[in-house]
Length: 239
Image (cartoon, rainbow, N blue to C red; front, side, top):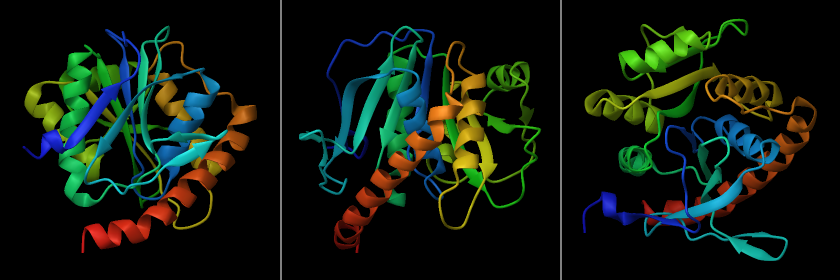
């Protein structure tokens, strides 16, 4: 079995998002990316469309309203043609390339026009100017049309970096939105800015600012609890 086959994607409903968008909701530095995408799901009426699992993922179940849930799931809004790979797990670095490859393969299968990811940066990002990196000239053109400043120099690690590299190599449009990293504590402001920035790239998608903080608080609590529960499992699996 190849490395890429170790990650299994199972769709639970028919999915048609042709010409639409795939959003990467895996946590990177901190939990802002995961919180923003989780909030996007709640405020834009997404439904569960599938699960993502692997023998290399920590075995964790999240119970919601008495129902067991996989920690990494696919949510879709077929009217808006948007899918989100939502995860409460912070993946081990050894899985970043594989997950990015699987994400792009899935986006290609479903004929998505753009894959959207995000990454935290240490240096200050001007809140009045949203910065993003694009994998192709087409992706950069989409960013400019949406009012983004296209990143010319920088380093993007992890799943977002792998998405950009493979997107460039395979001529797939990928956009990675940059946001300010916060060392500790909740950062609802960053989640709001990131949610609004991602929405600019997806026609019809909106972020309900009034409910966003409440959703972000709930999402952050659940994501941190899952990450903490999975930590000792990951330490054992990857030592």
